[in-house]
Length: 540
Ligand code: ACM
Ligand code: ZN
Image (cartoon, rainbow, N blue to C red; front, side, top):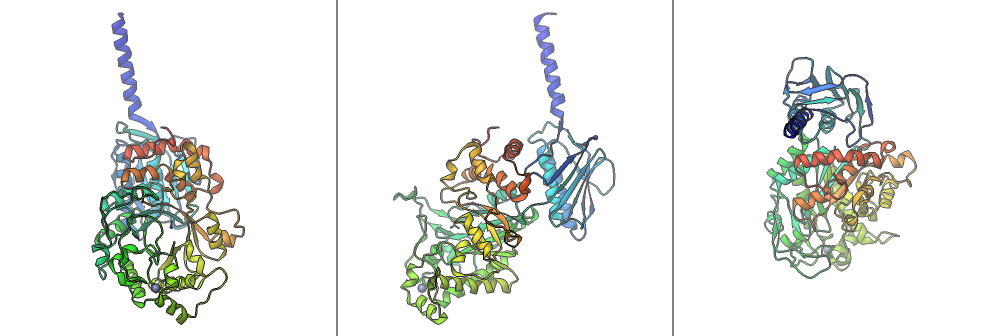
């Protein structure tokens, strides 16, 4: 045989091997977030291939959700590998069965895979959706040449550690729009996140249509330029604008709901209100003029706490917000509200006198004026059967115990909030602010570890009464320095994977080495979906 023929035969062999290897693959149930129990069974696994069916078996009163779940599974499989499934009502070998089992908790699901079928059972359609996410993540990613996947025989039982698994995006500083926010919601859904906290108003822009106050968007959604660096004095001369009409907000809410994500709106008050003050200067203590902020930080000009018209404005805005957002939680901010101007405002001081507020240890009378404002607004929120949320500064004035606190300033703030009897969400700037410029300098595994190793339940909390008040954790991206999706995704991914395991997986099962091992596959999923994740944390 001549050398040329040998080379040719070798090439044909390699090519043939490639074809075989490219067509069949094996799934891996060790996904992110790691399920509570994954017991692989020594038996033949399930062969997923063209013609496999999805059957919705038990739908309770969630028929629409369960059939949508079936479509999500079919699309998720088709996007990952080259396998076409169909929905069928006929029982047969080679099927994935989706069903409800009311003995399971609301977000609990199980998966049983063997050579006959894959059976997903959930305590609700939402739980079944998490089972579907697990199946999709167990598949090879970005493998359009794969026509068959063997899913190892397994019995999985899974439920989340925390009921509240949130992520916040600030759209005041920069605006992203409906299509991109839907992409972000897809990213959150991939990580089993169930609350999208939408920061819609701040000093630099008002981003939600309020019909009773049209100037909020006519004036307040536009700023003429932005500062180019923190603490600097140069501006870029580029206007920033944009807002969501109420219909657009409803589209986002519906899209998120199909992925079992509740959208929590935030109207941040009484501080961080320059965009509203620029629109309606009479809402401030001095009457202005005010301008939509072009710098970042904390501003002394805030809503007047003593003006009845200002309170009416806030109540009206919240009523419209509650008409749009079905969320049980309504976030009204409460952070970073300087009291300097209130000290010299006759209206604020008259209100303080009228309410009989006095300085007490740790809480000035102006702090208590803010607490009174928040409490008045909480009544409006409660009257619609909803719950108020606020940043942890609301603790400065003894808020009502029914308020849910987002502890952002420190982990200790979460300890204080829980000790004071509040349902508490842990989102410290030190670890869960993905836009924190200081921590963003961390590279490689250190950066992931910084998120992964913070436990939301501080060791300082001891009694079950206290620890049970930590209802979850949230990551945040503030967008002062995030002008586009590329930067947003760089900040979000892959650290969102670390956060989701903190939110979902049992504490005793969390292990950084195992997480990093599993993260490679998650990165392949990101790549397959075109997500622009940060590449230097974990090389592929
Ligand atoms: C915040 O970061 N001011 C909540
Ligand atoms: Zn005032």
